[in-house]
Amino acid sequence: MNKLREIVDNTIQVLEHMKKSGITHVSVARATLDELGKAPVLVSTATVTSAEFIALAARVKACTKCSELAQCRKNVVFGVGNEHAELMFVGEAPGADEDEQGEPFVGRAGQLLTKIIEAMGYRRADVYIANVLKCRPPQNRTPLPDEMNNCRPYLLEQIDAIKPKVIVALGATAVRALLDVQLGITKMRGNWYTFHNTPIMPTFHPAYLLRNPPAKREVWEDMKTVLTKLGRPIPKTK
Ligand code: SF4
Image (cartoon, rainbow, N blue to C red; front, side, top):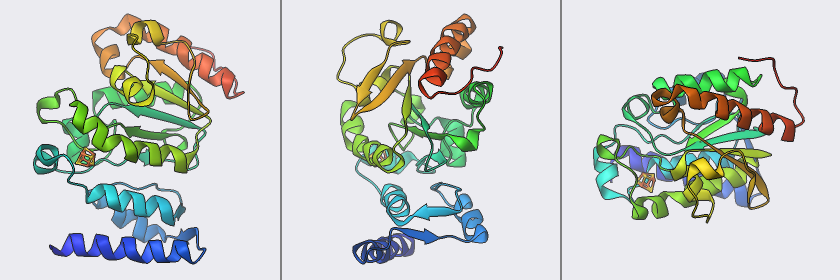
């Protein structure tokens, strides 16, 4: 067992022991968060992070369920943002930039997602952003069904911990991971679905918008519907 794995396992054991003892939150110093931010998995940058969430991030970081992905990845991309967010975005899988930096949606598509979030009146740090798959598929190929099955439970645990009021599913893969519906994203976008009592709004993935800029108009309509559901004002547009 290498040293890193040993540290992760020990951390999980300590956190699980604390949880059994009734401790549900641990204070994390800013300097520690800064160090964690440099580590291969990114955890929430909130000043207080639940022991459960840290333990989940540590488990995901050590995961090797998909042997091909575990061998190829540079970083596990757990998720980023506000662990108590009312709004959560779920995409497909990390790309090259995300794999390099250990943070979801940081490439060109990610920059567009950040613009959408800001156009809605949020800061990127206000929402939570994650992918169905936490490791990059080689050459950005579509995730295989086994990989989706392996990683989906982690996403469900993230959703259970964050308890967002609304989830925006970005693209067909995210929709497939969350909903048992056999419709294309074009037919589904703009309509509400429900997952474990949480409303889900499917919309186009930002990477699709880079290839089809006119579809930005439809995504903005979907985001206005989301803002209305959350009882937030709709900023003048864009
Ligand atoms: S994609 Fe998910 S299930 Fe597969 S190795 Fe990475 S973290 Fe584990």
